[in-house]
Amino acid sequence: MSVAKVVEISASSPTSFEDAVKNGIDKAGESLRGIKGAWVSEEKVEVEDGKITEFRVTLRVSFVLE
Image (cartoon, rainbow, N blue to C red):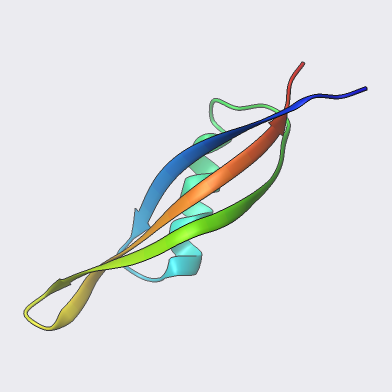
């Protein structure tokens, strides 16, 4: 039997939501082993002078406990 845990993280990118997700998973992988999946629970953008300057996501990352 395996047991999984879910953690919530935030990540950002100046390029796209997709890149923000990739950045978040890459960073989480530096300290979490056994990542099995993630889902985006929130998407936001930062806007300055009418232009998007940053894409932000909140991710729920699941991983198997050892």
